[in-house]
Length: 324
Image (cartoon, rainbow, N blue to C red):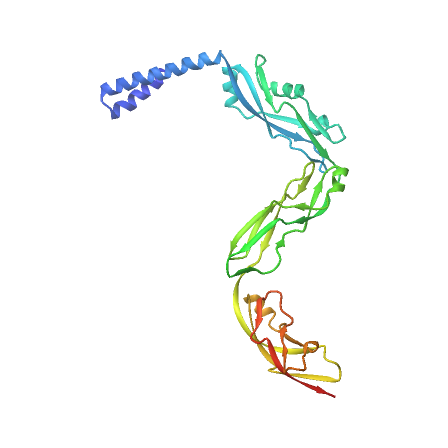
């Protein structure tokens, strides 16, 4: 104590006037004495405190999976002497280690009852400490050692591209199925799993996103999430001169249409336009010819799936029928 006071005095004498130094030293002395007195007083008094103790399970077989949550920590409300509590607060966090075989019934139940848990927690406090409560009061978890069942993943996604944009293809999943672990009765009823609902609006670019699989009561899903890719592209307006073909004409009949090509208008993505440029036709159906008129209807034939709002510049063309 005297050495600390001497050091403070030398330090303060360098920077402060003697009168101010004496006042500050007196104040600090009172603070130190009060702190020491408080520590002695506290060390001998019983103090209530809430304390967390970590829980670790060891020796669990690799094929065992818990179907209900096992707590990582338990919360203990304890009353103990201040000295013991201060030692515990400044020490390492205590840890309760539970060997799987010691608390497993071998039939799907892992259980640590209230008396066992209280006895395990009491080891970290003094003999005169009083444990008021423990949360949770006991550990009771179901587990399974059955192999996982592979089931498909169904997406619950609402996708709305922004104006002038479109979803260009199906949503791509990082994996189509996941493993579900449970008891045999529950597994027999599970045929698919679903993701949490996701709403995506005003998309203007391809999106990569992680989606979480919705939990199933009494079962564990691995993995709990998958990645999805949603292809989004900007739409462009295009025109194209396409051939008009005649369908359903008899073998001894040749139908010639004028003009033989027609202008088509549509919206598509740039990638779709480049990919399907040769798969686009217009059609005249021989069965729709009305001999009382010199024109026949022309309609859209094959259209690539990426084309939208397709329409033709003409709704009919002239024709000539030649018979052999």
